[in-house]
Amino acid sequence: MRRSSLALVAVLSTLPTCLTGSERPWEARVNLPVPISVELPVIPPTNPFATPVDTLPAILTSPLVDRLDSVFRSTAALYVDSGGVVRRAVLLALPLPGVGDELRQALLETAFTPGRSLSGPASTWLDVGIDLEGRIDRAKLMGVRALPPEPGVVPVPESDPFPAVEARDVQLPATPIESLEQLPVPRSFRVRVASRSWRQEFRVLAEVSPEGRCTRVVFLSCPVGLRRFFLASLSGWTFRPAQSAGGPVTSWVRLEGALEVEVGSLRANALRVMRSSSYPRR
Image (tube, rainbow, N blue to C red; front, side, top):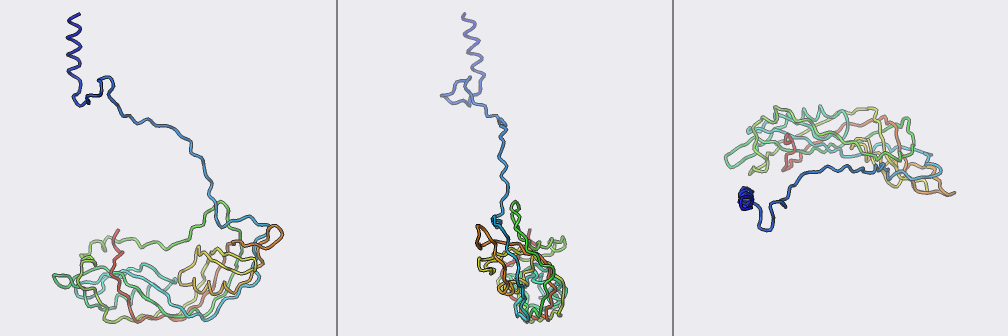
């Protein structure tokens, strides 16, 4: 009997000393992850623009405005070296298709007073804004359709992808724009973009009131530079309103089609230099 007691004391003396006084050796906690299979309910997507109606809105008239003056805003990232030379011009956002080549060339030809840090002239990346002034001369509507919003598909507006970062741009030595004592300043800037025409497809959601007028618009696919033109035109469209329970009701409709667009020459004589740099940062 005495031998058993000694053996028990010997075993207990070999247990870890990290146990608290309130824990007995046989009560030590062991944390083990235990997977539990849980069936999550499948929630079908719902489109907030899709509402049940007896009949959808229908287009009655669809006039387009002519000769609409506008400002078409673009942004670009420039690498301005310590001598004030623009060595790289990366277009970040364009308002209309087809204007990129002429705009990029004008930016590359622009001379700057270089930015300065505490140690002197410095190379840097910076964002600039270009406000192109011009006019949409006319447009022609082609194949427009009024379709019901899809009940099980949540609409997602298209967006232009951010330009891919090139390895050579990351390797250029650059002082962060936030560290500069003085920003680069363009000495002069002028750009002229020739007139052009093209075919442009579009997709928009339009809310039609019981009076048959468009009251709200969501652009799903449409260049930014055409949206003001589209809004001005849609304000003059007329619809046969949706019907529900025997009377007209407010309802959304999906408009899809194409435009043949003619735009006059665009021009800008100034750059907006921003104290920011969104490229080539990752």
